[in-house]
Length: 111
Image 1: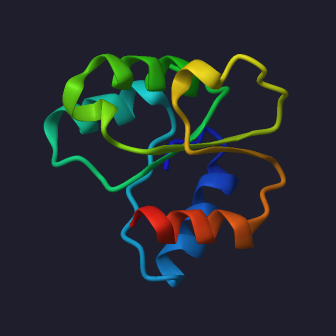
Image 2 (image 1 turned 30 degrees about the vertical axis):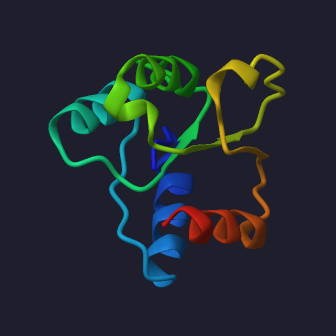
């Protein structure tokens, strides 16, 4: 889970953990990317599209250029309209506030 808002990141992590998923959180794309390069790839990445340091669009673009990371499905969550997400090969873009039932259903499909 890559989300710059501490409260939202904590809430998402808590909900996913209660559903039985292992969750690692990051507050920006650069920290998440460092982890992805140095650890076993996760089953799924959930990312905010607008963040400081490295946003979700930049993170996903770098992931898609790396053969190992490109295989990881990604779900975006955002409070903003993002018309230019088609090239990011996202499994889904959720607008905040997120429909948690739909998000959990999609997470279950990938994990």
